Image (cartoon, rainbow over all chains, first blue to last red; front, side):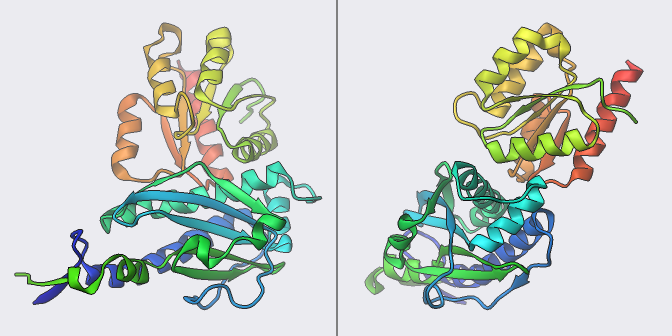
Amino acid sequence: MPRACSNDGVNLFDVVRAHEELVERIQEVVRSTLRIHSRSAIKVLPVHTEGLPGPPDVAIIGVLRLTGVPAGNSLLALGLSYAAFAEIYENMFGEPYVALSEDSGDIAGELVNIIFQSIDPDLRELGLELEPSLPAFLTGRAIDGWSQATLGPTVVLPFSLEAGDLFVAIPDLRRRFAVATPPDLISVTDQP
Amino acid sequence: MTYSHIRILLVDDSNTTRKILRKTLTEMGVLFVDEAADGLQAWAMLEAGAASYGMVFCDWHMPGLDGLQLLEKIREHESMRALPFVMTTAERKRTEVERAVLAGATWYIVKPFEAEAIRNVLAKAVLAAAAS
């Protein structure tokens, strides 16, 4: 059966198929994480492949910078609205949420770290060995400068809690490889 | 079962995780909870008061001395060889779990953890201490 391979050995067909599985895996991870850390049920909303849907209502973004071969540099991000973040905080600590602080960044960073560690085995199965940076976070004006340009081709997985919305942004593996692999470097080989 | 007598050391570079663990343990009746933000700080606290700690909850990935390195140091130390050590980490690869267990982790809890998982290991540690 003919299969398209990129020059770095990652099979493009596998990337496309695995992309769908990866999205489902992240949705499952976010659902199970928030089942523990939030009061209300979490709804999984339709995936966006063309950036955030409209002006995002985001108060804080937890970010992991991922470096590795062959995906290059990319980011995994978790953005939360103020209301969604407050619901999670209040459920985590049993106390009312007052204002964004360094502690808030630590929470957003820890949540995005849990998401990455949970999907890391799936990424490795794909041949994507990514090293995460220490978690960072964005709030206020820093979020205004956060854009698709920062992330590169990205898929956004939105979710909603009773109180508010959140999203996970991941590299769009299909477009990432399409960009990274010019047509003349794609070869067709026969696999047994 | 009462946990008021046990002294626990929480080791995690995430203030959030330490705070959640402290809250969970306190709600279960644990009165003595100390915190360290990395392995080096934890090692200093353990060396200073090894006899008084009944259990350690420790993250794996931390800057400086990580959880696995701390565990190895503990197991090499005469008076801490049997100290119950719970690896609390988001790392869920089977090979990594095996590494931690081979290094001497008593229990392994994957983040995000539920209070029930903490209660289970706490109960086991208290029962084991009573039996020894």
